[in-house]
Image (cartoon, rainbow, N blue to C red; front, side, top):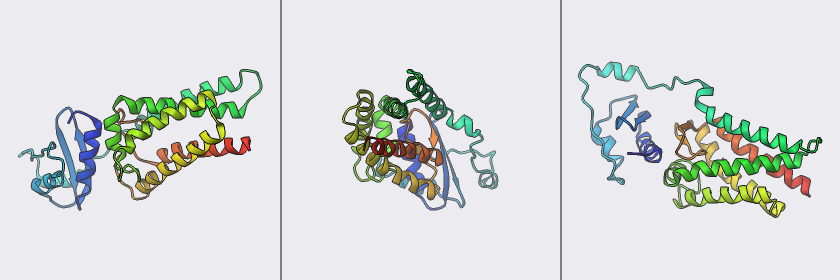
Length: 239
């Protein structure tokens, strides 16, 4: 495997096996650390990948590590909250700062302009990261999005829809249509996110494509929810 998209796909398939509690894949070493609450043979793990023959799995022999120690020491992400979500924090901070500067340009705060610039920056930046590895994003998106699970091409379409929404907010194209479409699109996306967070599924969030390894969490809910709230607020102000 060479991309985060493949890694996310394999991780998702292995996590679907009963008794598998976590999967950590190291692309550089070509190794997958599978945490389980009872022993599962390599054959069963490989069988989970049978529909994707390009992924081959074999057991790594480590005589110096006892089975007892393996089961008592599950993999844990030791990074702090800020270390994990630093990319999103920086992106939202940059967008907010630029939006605020533009909204205050005439020395009176223009809330409508602030939200429009913010949403334009959000969709343009997030679509950019998805475009860096479009295939990887589409593959990761199928892990939780309710539409992408049934229609693989939706991941590709979604990235371009975000790009078009970014442009639409920049040129202020048909605000009523643009904001209505945004609220619907982000609402559908939010359903899959909520399901994953409520079910405590340990999967990668595809919001920044396959470039960053960000876990699905309440941060993703806030991210999608913010766009819905802003689009509805702008609709209300236009009406």
